[in-house]
Image (cartoon, rainbow, N blue to C red; front, side, top):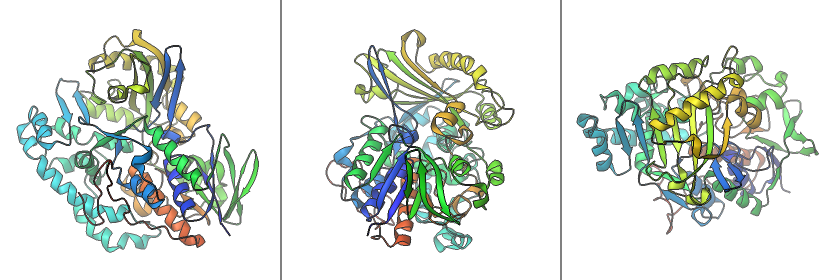
Length: 524
């Protein structure tokens, strides 16, 4: 008899869990409040008189395909059969307001030549940086791939063994000083901490592996955008028997004592032997679970939690192509520390904001009508807080500032070329995507909110509740979320007596595969 499992949210973690649990023999029903899959990794489709524009909503960098390819292989499928991953020759351009530039690439000699324009000494140190972080990733992978169910897990041999390399009480910027003297070069290797919604001056040094992984394994663009991956995962889950109910938000998780027994939607009650929460963790706990049932993550604890930053977004459909603008561009202000301080304090919008641009049509022209482009602009800003920014007042002024600064990044005369525009503020992340206080990167990855101290995959406060997504262990970022879904699905399958989920490496690097496989215990 198949065991019924309900999944709340069709984001990347929920879709991966639906695939793996269906493969393990569960009767999976996935509920999604929107009419599309993907959550923050979905697609914004914009029909206009010029034609249809397609934008990534959230993540735009696709890194380390091995984990997702492995999930597909576990389910008897090949990722490369359903999604084309285009490896970018130039990862991104980092443009400094002062005029310097770094052109990033997995071609290390080419990268060194670019860095040497700023600091020849720092360029020479790149191989040492790569070697150190190669060892760091190898040490951390067993930690990343394991659940943390109790404090005793912190004493696992692999955790203790990794501490020497992880340097947990050192920040990313401090760690990078061992190789790079020029602060601009360090920024070029540390802006990735914004993937976690954190400052490189506060983010734990472990996360120097983010830049390393880009150079070691490459950066990919899924043809059709990240939403194409989400749709392929949904199709695979349906083919394996999962039921995906779109436009049907879960209103309540049902309990008998402390055990979850199902969910309630507007369509009625669905009984379940286990419930997987892929919705934003803090929002879901606040709205779907009574405070009295939550011990560790009660309302008081949630109010004290350290949150990531939010983002101000512009999705622009524009006339013409931008052939001289890279697929990814990062623009860093001269007073980067002051800008980060404005973001962390969240009282006013940054006066000299840093921002990121995706010009995806330079790689994937079908995302826009002929002779048009999609332009995705992300600006880190503070999450919502009492006495914070009133975006109803500030948004128009901030938009004007960003459009003016885009000209400095190589996008001239932008406003008169706009034929479609969508703006999102922290208010919109909160209201439209149900993101707690608009903190789009979830709980901050501080030392007190990682590993055992992050919400557990087998949720510690309740019975029969499991978590996936950036708000739980191992953390944010698509490869990490996919890894977390594997951990969660394996725990749930073991608890319900389903067919065991084999988490060993299955993908064999067949022809057309996006990257060579990484064998267990090795880093390619």
